[in-house]
Structures are given as C-alpha cells and as structure tokens.
Image 1 (cartoon, rainbow, N blue to C red):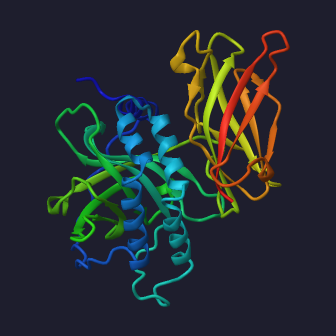
Image 2 (image 1 turned 60 degrees about the horizontal axis):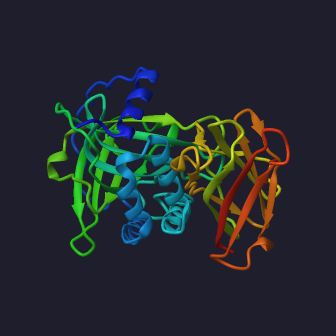
Length: 364
C-alpha cells in the first residue's frame, strides 16, 4: 500500500527541516500516579466536547475524507473544528484556569500553555514514529502562535495509511516549544464516557496530556519514549484570539472564470477595526479552475471560521493578482444559519475573473 498524502507531506517537511530523532530521555523516579492530571473543569469540558464532536457530521466527514487529504487540508479542517462551537467551551475553560495558580486552586497542578486537536493513529508518520498529528495553538490571547505537531513512539515497522480517531492535547509548553522527548506516565479510562486520558512527562513533570475515545494507548506506554516535533504554519497569523459577538464560516469557493487555466488562490481577511491581516491557507495556496476544465478543482470547501463583532473584510489573491476587498457586515445576514455569497467579478475585463464564496452566520 502507498502512503497517504498526509504522510508524504510530513516526510517532505521533515526532509526540508533536516529533522532527526532526539536522544532518549533521562529517567527519574516516576511521579506518583495521581489520576488527576487535568483540572476537573478542563476534563469535564474536554469530555463533553469530544463526545459531541465525534457524534457530529463534521467528524464523520473528516474521517471519510482522511484517505485523500493533504497535510494542508488536515490542518485546515482541524483548525476549523478547534475554533468552532464544539470546542469553544474547552478554550474558554483553559483561559479561565490559566489566570489561577496552585495556591489558589490545589487541584491545578498542570496549567496548559497550548492546546491541540489531532488524530491519534497507528501508522508510521515520519522518521519511524507512529502516533499523532494535528493542529496546535497557544492558550494565551496575546499573539498566539500556531503550528502542526507530529510525534509518538518509535515504530520499526512500515505502515501505510492513518488509523485512529480525534484527540485533544494539552501541553505544558507553548507551541514554539512543543518539540522534544516525552515519557509515558499513566493512562486513565473513564468507564462512563469511554474517554481515555494519557499523561506524558517531560523534564520530570507532566508535559502533555492527550484525551480521546480511541487513543490506541494502554498501560504499556508507561516509561516509553515518545518523540514530538512542531512545524510552523507560516509567517502570517491564522488564529484569531479573543471572543467575538459573531462567527461566520466560509463554506464553498466556486471558480466560474479563472485568471489563467489553473489559478493558485488564497484568502486574507480582517475583522472589524483590527489591522491584523490573517491568511488562509496558512503556508500554501489552493488550485482552482472552471468546471468545464476540471470539475474537481472548480469547488473548494474552504471551512474557514472568522470571528467579528460588526464586519469583516475578505481579500482574494488569484495568482499574482489581488482582487478588490469585500467588506461584509452583520446586516448582510438575516439571522443565524442564514447565508450570504461574496462575489469577485472582473469578467468584463480582458482575462476577467469570477469567483464566488458562500458564507453562513454561525453565531450572532
């Protein structure tokens, strides 16, 4: 069997970065098992979010599309899910607990600085490592960093495909410092929900906790080395910090008239009066053309979620051309779940362009 596109993309990124497995972790006396690695409020929010998301059509679509998905597409889908309504309570709870300290709350002995949403698989991902790959973002709202993480246990076998299910990750370090060696510490299974929580130590203290229904991890992971790497997702920010009154999702981009035979496109957006320009996809572009040329490339299921209070601005880049900004206000939507189609139309000109993007209001 051949490798999935995700695995090929990871291999290419690893080669460009000249990655190598770190040395084995130094062993100290394993911390006493507490069965309380996550604060009860975080654990409750994580359990509820995971169960709700796994029962959603978004999760079913993610699993169905996984075989042909590139790393870029996976990053996009996981980012959309983590920033969406299913996991919003988790992010809110993390930020609330981050303002406390252990003296104020004796149950708070592990304060995550980053959170991730990924896939826990049983396939070799890169460098002989099998485990998890996903999207990570800092918990802090001050210039949060984002990235792709990949890692797990060393696997001498060769495997094709990625099997497993969705998992939340809670990291002691911020995104920029996720990489390194982690040692399996303990596994806890909730008999009522089926949620598995696996804790890993780094520098003799808990550095990572994974939570999911089908992690593929059992007590055999204790005292086993796990290796994790982090890849930057680009220079432009792609994560909007803070809360907002409204959420809109860009659902489908359609190419009716391309600039060239095949266009490479990407989107930039701004929200309200904030001058920060966000880019999507993070480090690449998406190829599109007219349906009569290639129907598979005439539609792009974007999935991007934008936070705003009163308005947001979309900027479409088509090849080396930047089209006019489109500013969309809350008044364009009749109500929640109502849609509006953004249109870029220069078809009256030579080599004219016509793109449209369906959007829907999710909140507000």
